[in-house]
Length: 255
Image: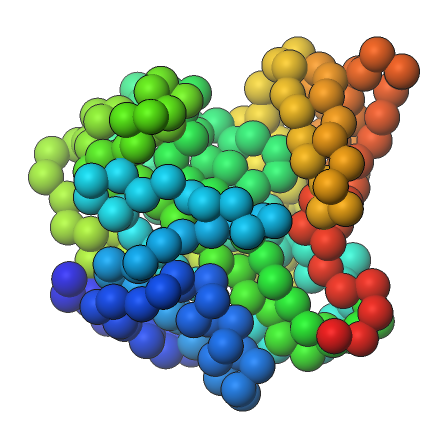
């Protein structure tokens, strides 16, 4: 896969094979990789999200990337960058599908095409709650196929109506470009504009189950997205508000 020129400040590390892009980027971040390092693994041996759960790889493995950042900011601010990344992936993907394709997000880390999960976003970090030393935002995107075992719960660019043939390298460039634009907007104008783009595409009144970083599972119906990106669920026990970091679990102590 040939990746065209990327935005200034993004340094591409492209690997034909690797264990997983998430593991590769975390290792590089811990070893001192510069901010803006963008790791792409073309054929990962595996892909995994939270709690070491497997991301099922379809026949075509799709695209797997990770950004290394060194934000030197509190964890409660940095967790907003998961939403920034999700919006960036959604904006990039929209360039390669038919205009009528439905694009939605699912709190807090999924990108949906026609109600099927096409991409997922994960975060890992090191440092303290007051100041993160490094942050890795990794993602996986189904491009030409999706796992058959998931049926209509999964989606891909091609299966949901690609707008003609597309070059995976161009998709990678679009994601990098949109990520830089979104993170710049977040840095200059705050979280609210990005949050607005994200939250208006989260369907309300949908039932959902969320597994938090501590293993607790919360089930309910989506009521709204509050300021700061909190999810408000209507559960059997009453209204429950979940913060972004309840899911991602960025550092609460030195790691």
